Image (tube, rainbow, N blue to C red; front, side):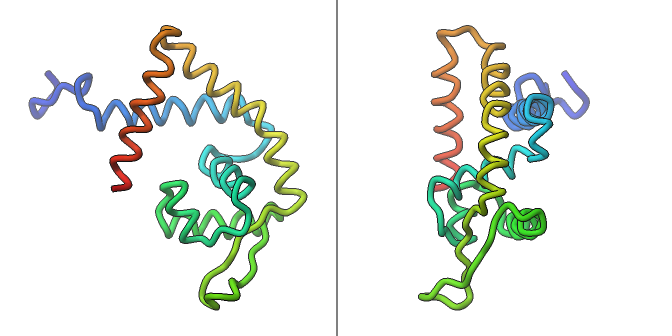
Length: 145
């Protein structure tokens, strides 16, 4: 037992946090030439799939909190990877779109991101990989309710 009576090897919160750190490290190693973080990559993927989403919709789709997403938007705007325009129906909201440079950065990052996924899943027995992904999706979906 660890101090405080908690066995960290049995703490789902701790283990998910550590797994997230491992995943981010693997992504950084495999997709390092892209210059994107895992969250930036995820955000660009969502924008590519659903161009014109508002920042509020991006928060819902990615699970990234509002203030972090606003900072990410500012950084990606500064790098010329996305552009935003006011939404006609709501002058307070912005629609986000990939620029050609953003689409190129996303295309270039995809092989590294796929390699990171493969490397991460390679630590699991093949028969458990889909179950692992399904379980993670259950956790993420339950968190959104």
